[in-house]
Amino acid sequence: LIRQGHPVFTQDIAFGLKILASSPGARLGEIFLDKVYITSRNRVISPKNINQKGYIDAMRRNDIVFGIGPAGTGKSWLAVAMAVRALQAGDVERIILTRPAVEAGERLGFLPGDLMAKVDPYLRPLYDALHDMVGADGLDRLTDRGLVEVAPLAFMRGRTLNSSFIILDEAQNTTPEQMKMFLTRIGFGSKAVVTGDVTQLDVQNNRSGLGGLEPILGSIPGISFIWLSARDVVRHRIVQEIVDAYSRYLSVEAQIEE
Figure 1 (cartoon, rainbow, N blue to C red):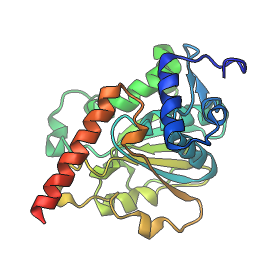
Figure 2 (figure 1 turned 90 degrees about the vertical axis):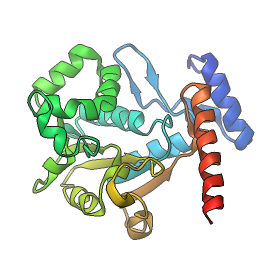
Figure 3 (figure 1 turned 180 degrees about the horizontal axis):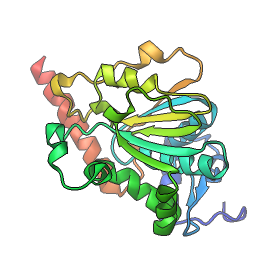
Figure 4 (figure 1 turned 180 degrees about the vertical axis):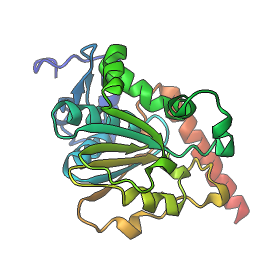
């Protein structure tokens, strides 16, 4: 990797060892040298494991991609990187960020400020990713020119979204009706990425629009489901251990209930 001009950091060695431990025949160069985007600070965004590589390739090939997995697996981060790349390449005319404001419920109207200010706390992770990609000035220019649009999921109803890269975040908190409404907004020249973690439901009665969707839509050409796991966490080592610990705890609880 160094001979090919790729800077290798300590965490890259750890990621490489994890990849080779699970897939001894993996070619690290094909993964680490797949440059998705170069940020305003010259940081190279690239996949750090096999499933992330599959996720990126799925976004390149398909119109609608579902990225499902726990926190820290890069679902939203890589989707934003692909969106910015598509916008700058002229493949789309705008980026649309949306998510269900489940935590706010009816209290959304009582938050101070205009629509952007009300929705901002719920889309902050996507904003942070955009900020890292294009910098503060770049983000201001994109929003001022209307090239980045932020809206709660409820505001998608009745629209047809053409020539757009649309990211629906926290999709596990949609209802089945909301998910169908969102997916039928996709217009010509658009790409949609739906991210979520089916183990973190805040929606009432656990009626998630994301859970159980693959058997319904998985056979449609142009739609891809990518499942990431705790092994794909690329944050601090302790994040993966936390995810693993919760998975073990929930598994034991389920066995007790049975």
